[in-house]
Length: 328
Image 1 (cartoon, rainbow, N blue to C red):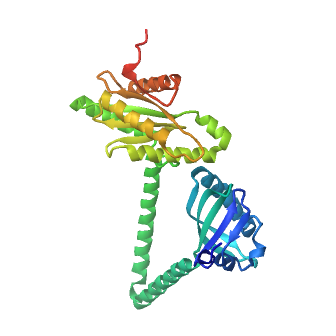
Image 2: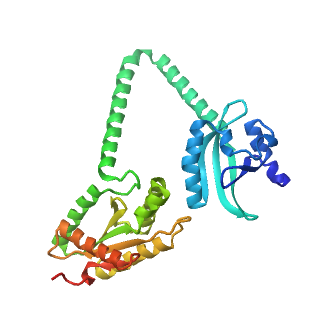
């Protein structure tokens, strides 16, 4: 380790892919109040409490193996004297000299916590002084505070209810209920104005195999990242939602058949080309454009049949319901 890195004003530690400490700098040794010989060759989790070991093992390893890096992960290290050291961790996984290693930069958070504590204490003292200089209005202030607290609690509960009613908690996208409401609204608008819209249904190819092979935490990460990708490719007027399991849906206002296929192909190509770490993810898409005979159920059914055609046709492709042969 060169002198500049060894004397850098932040902790630096290199661990093997299995967590064995390969090298550390002086700042990291000072954080843990120990010598270099006490750390080199030991497992990084030996400097953690049981709770932080579980956190590190459950989130750090799967995340860095999936994406190759970790940014601003907060947890605590433990000194030789069993003192907690709150830190902020950034890490990158890379190959060096024929070995997979993880280089980590560790920043102390103690000063930040002290500043927050000082600010809280200052706020408390100001509130006490204010109360002392307004003794005559104590009762009014208490009633006002109770009112504000209850109002804030009511607003918080209403916001939670609204969020639960319309948002998928895992991906942050709109949920199935919200999608169905907007689908009916889109149908009503189409009947009034004649302006077309299209519906897409997305499904992750072989998603069960991913869950069975790598576990549900990795599956959840993939669902979350795919949701972020779909949202980033969507227009401001589009409605992207999680339909259930590994299925997503999108309502595309003002999109006719050609536009729906073009946008669906864009989603499909982007998913196949995205960086998913050590995994390869593709999606199949079924599309349907509204017709005068459609109801909420029929347009979803037509898009769903198109999705199955994409699956049966080899996956990683787009099928529009209008391009399928009519059932006899």
